Image 1 (tube, helix red, strand yellow):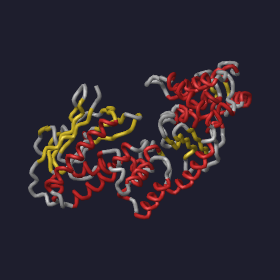
Image 2 (cartoon, helix red, strand yellow; image 1 turned 135 degrees about the vertical axis):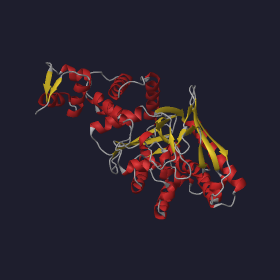
Image 3 (cartoon, rainbow, N blue to C red; image 1 turned 45 degrees about the vertical axis):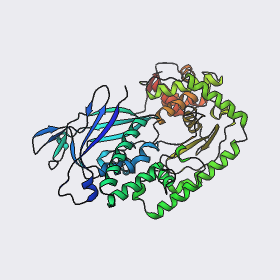
Image 4 (cartoon, rainbow, N blue to C red; image 1 turned 135 degrees about the horizontal axis):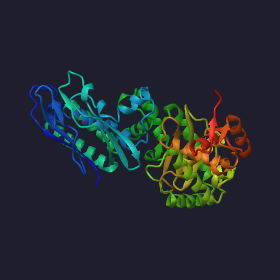
Length: 445
């Protein structure tokens, strides 16, 4: 049974509330997770009354506005939380993925929303407990936990809540500034024909919050959105910057034009992708290194490459896929695009490891029946650990490395010799020996 989020406001009188929108949307709010076990996220201890209750009171306008502003970040961007917890990038991500940033007006539980798969969103619930400031009237009592909700169910829940708030505002406070602002934001993210819809979606792809951007930056993003020939819903540019996009767009257009002349290669690519997807059923509990290892073995088998041989250029560049010189911005190292049934790759580097790592995401991505694009970044990509393991197995097959080990231990000089003999990067050999426990590694002291 799928878990569903329910956000239920019950409208209340709001004596003494000056803002007409806040007064109109004053409510008792109850938020629950409905599933095999019902979880009440708004169960609180009222410190003043020394009682517990299952709802909180206040204006629900800030929560509705947060959902509207965060919509494209939550549902149209593949950006993941940066790994450095204290970084500015982390803060920019959390303000559109955590209710801690929903603004004032009503107390809300500490819930963070993170994409975990194409169709799932994880809700991470943090407890209040002793860390709740003494001046806060309520303390949330829901124990810490993480649950996964189908993305479409979460969208439906959020949409129903915002629509309900807007109906209330338009009926009771139609001329309030808060009403007009929420109407404008909601239309921009829901209506593809609304002014700045494409620009707002693109800004979310870049990790930028549209309503906080300078007008000059908004104008740059508007210009870039007009240049895009790929549908915005197909573009994932994690970690890219506004300034880097023009070069990205020019390069991708040139790549498309060149690759569209390779119809036979595209047909073979589609056939390979179908074979891989049919056979690729990894266990959810499988560690990243084993996922990558098995993916590489499956890829070798699919193309008829020996299991215990080094990687050839044909193995790294399958089916005449177009490779192009492209200078990636910042810490981005490669980009793979697929347009319809046309695979296109642009690379920042020509190193074998970079090619092999990026090939994993291209091979095991959404597939040839969907338009998608992905920029691979060490900082942002969830697939990076698996892709690294895939590259290690592709370039330094464990059977080949094992055949070159004679004894229970190897030194760094032994690793260098094995790498030179089989034509693989030293790091790949090192990780294969360590991950597969082929021998003890004597590191210099």
